[in-house]
Length: 144
Image (cartoon, rainbow, N blue to C red; front, top):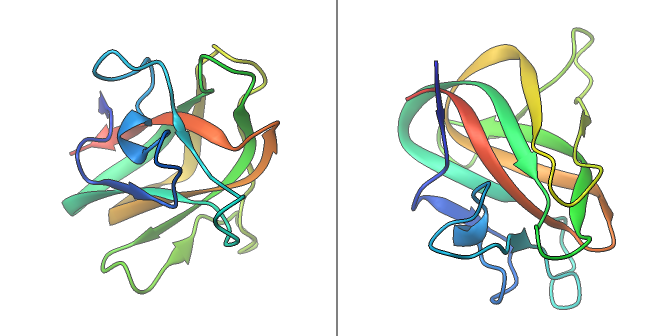
């Protein structure tokens, strides 16, 4: 298994000041900031995704808060797709979408294992609850 950070294939509903390229844990290119959802200008539900371009195996996620502010995602759901059009929820044994626990502070990395290994091209994170403002950094655990 390889732990890797999402690269240039990150897209999201976003705030220009806190764009998706800042979504990697431990910062990127000298930025401590994170991806943040801008509810003021966007009324849809927040999400951030990584497109691996080809099919990969994903076994978990590592999440982290913004780092500079008391902004973090406390709960999220995960969907995945092969084509970007048809989406599947990560569910429990009963078929109910799982709400994964997120962060509780500004700095701690939270590792979450998925209930099963996903074989997919696109992974999307849907924050459902957050502290103060919807901001996060993340890494994907898997084989690619």
